[in-house]
Image 1 (cartoon, helix red, strand yellow):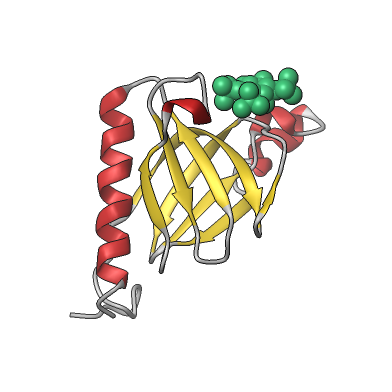
Image 2: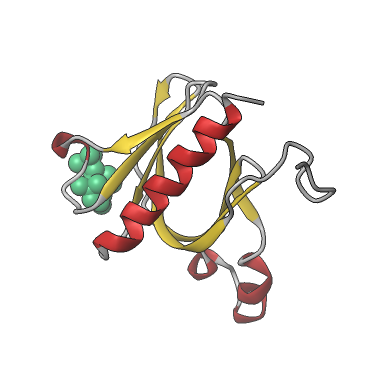
Length: 130
Ligand code: I3S
């Protein structure tokens, strides 16, 4: 049953720290720039927040954690384990959007990465039906 908070019904929600980099921007390959990100999955949107370490001052670092860097619409997206040639890092996910953007997401703890993979796949599947 749709709730006021999520008009499209129940969508899984998840949040945590991830390493991420954008690799393709609207079809154009871009240079990797891995950074840590507070990552939130809510209402079919994945939001990567800015790396607090990139903040210009110590005081700004708290607020920068809540500033979105990328917002990714999961409707029509696909996510899977990245092929080995995509990164030398372990536990890497590849997220491709309908708009032709691609992101890599990585975390050293395998269980955390498999939970994110499952949550995003479930969300994408649910979005197919609404
Ligand atoms: O796929 P690539 O180009 O080997 O990715 C690595 C580079 O982006 C590298 O940066 P510079 O080429 O600017 O020095 C990064 O430091 C590495 O982390 C990238 O590779 P991994 O395998 O970590 O995704």
